[in-house]
Amino acid sequence: MPIYEFLCQRCHEKSSVLVRNISAPVVPTCPFCGSSEMVRVISSFAYHKSTQAVWDESGPPRNHADKDYYKDPRNIGRWTEQRVKEMGVEMPPKVQEKIRAAREGVLPPELGV
Ligand SMILES: [Zn+2]
Image (tube, rainbow, N blue to C red; front, side, top):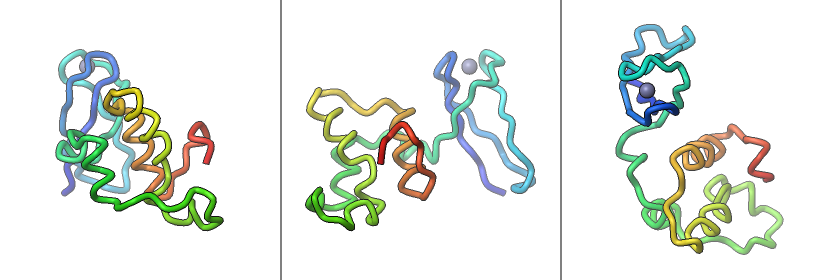
């Protein structure tokens, strides 16, 4: 049975939910504050990765003008990451999560890719 991790958007505590039936929707509730504003995080390991570590893993960026640029899912969100990096801050977890989801094939419209 998989264990999903969720980050509470209200109190920012993280909690794990053991998923007994993977086909049933998971409606997590924060055990700390009772909020249901929970965002799934893929794993605590990935969540703590720095932007640089993510870059190192996904390799050097390709030429942005390449017409196949976004066919490589590793490039999705890279410019968002770069902008955040230029500002000298770490990517907010919510944005990291969206980029990760996009790289897995779920494209959020606000990334504009
Ligand atoms: Zn909470």
